[in-house]
Image (cartoon, rainbow, N blue to C red; front, side):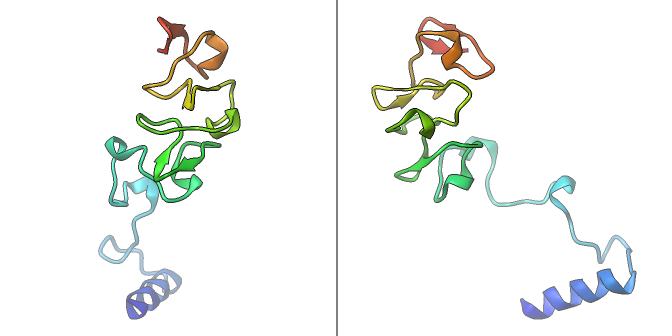
Length: 110
């Protein structure tokens, strides 16, 4: 692995930019081993949406997760109601202000 990294670094600094030797950047669609359908699974807070906490292996704003404080839910007005973030698919809201970027309709952020 170290040899590969050194070879890639040398190639970049040596000025060889042929398609066979360049390294994919995230903007080029690098594969990180997960998809949007996997959102919610986490090991660290940084695996979740901005400002959202990772609790028990799930992002607080994902289906099936729990929160303890409003700050677990990512801000923007999202609230922790009965241990569920108002902006989570299985959460409940009372006001539009609890649904960052969405509206509260029939007690759900939509």
